[in-house]
Image 1 (cartoon, rainbow, N blue to C red):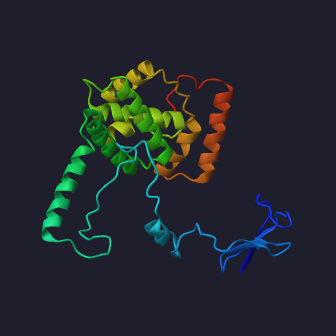
Image 2 (cartoon, one colour):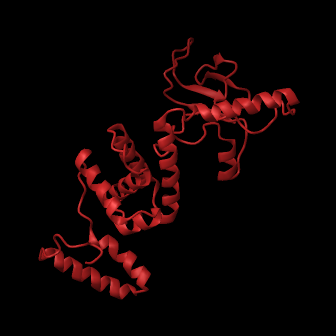
Length: 259
């Protein structure tokens, strides 16, 4: 198969044209005008394996998982694998196996040697469980981790419970992204009193100077309708009533879930 590339910036030394042609079979690159060979071998930058599904591609990918603020090390740390084999696939000897086990132990301990790292480990472990319980998106989780890191940098976690401040950061992220989750939802899932989460939330708003948008009651309507088992006709009628109430400006200061 011959692949022709245009405007590569490389000109032929013989005729001066820039119409380079690459032969993928032989790896030769030559001029399309006079046939002068520019390079006899072109290295293939693609993978040497084939994948026929997304799972196979993910298993053979060399890049690993992307960086994330919701990980205590942002996904940049290295981990010694648990396979007791060398690079050729041969099993390790007994002495080398014990040495690798000690290296794994010290490697795991060295990743959380500071108090902030241990704090992030506990907080983001709870955050992962909240993500599954409340069915939250990755964007909300990343925003929560960003707010919590800012709170830790300003020393707001000292003297306060980690789950309480994390729940407040999660509620702030839901408010900022327009995700319909209430304080009662967050506090009940993390098993903390609502007033404690509300106190930490007001602290974050004051100390971090966060500006929260007003919750749109329309976004809460579909959730209430699905839990109550209402029809689409009822939902459309409720939407009309809400729009009329917004035009009359009688919804200001009211609870969105109550509306």
